[in-house]
Picture 1 (spheres, rainbow, N blue to C red):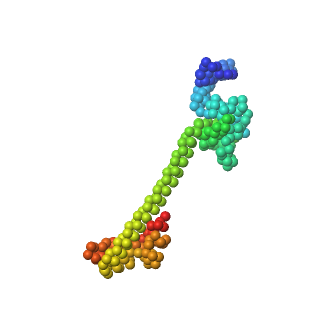
Picture 2 (cartoon, one colour):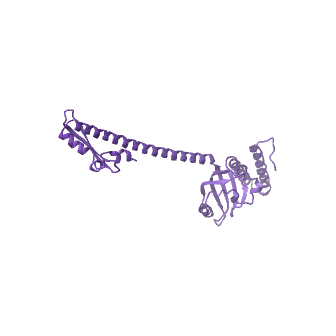
Picture 3 (cartoon, rainbow, N blue to C red):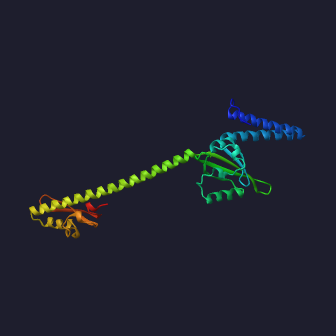
Length: 274
């Protein structure tokens, strides 16, 4: 039965559901003699009809048998999958399988619901036109008198946009971490370069002062300022590729050492800093 063009989908299905319930209620009037029991059944049918209508309007719904063959789909399932109802009934959900989930994932899903437990998770499906979409899924098994499931009700809500946003945020986070790492390396390199150049400038200044005047303290400072392995390579920090001990000292104008301030350990010479 096709949906009339002059009616909205909700209005049309409400009328169809009301007609089905009316038919069942008419059967109750004929087949159930107990008035109280008949009224109780009437209220139960009306409540079930209301629940079904609300569910169909708010979620993607499918019902399968114990083997997974589709017995019922609502309009939202048809809309998101791109398949007509006649193409879906009798098929299983491999028709919309995107191939994203491995065998272990599907095995765990079936092990859960076949044991009578509810399964919840996110599934990536593929529509008829090839578009992939994500659905937040709850599968509820219905058991018979022996406790074995005889059918499964799957209720889904599309979360494609949410998953895309999560992927975008993860990509942005990875880019930010890469930028931070590059900046950290650049800052470290610039810091080493700056300190190395400053220390070498101090050494040049001390050498100049030594050349201008004799001072035992300055001579000691000149010898201590650059490690032996640097002096052996010509006294240039640019030629050093080993960690150095560099001693800083303050020098008074009148040629006396006032204090040795501190030692900087683990400093690599400027041209070889990484």
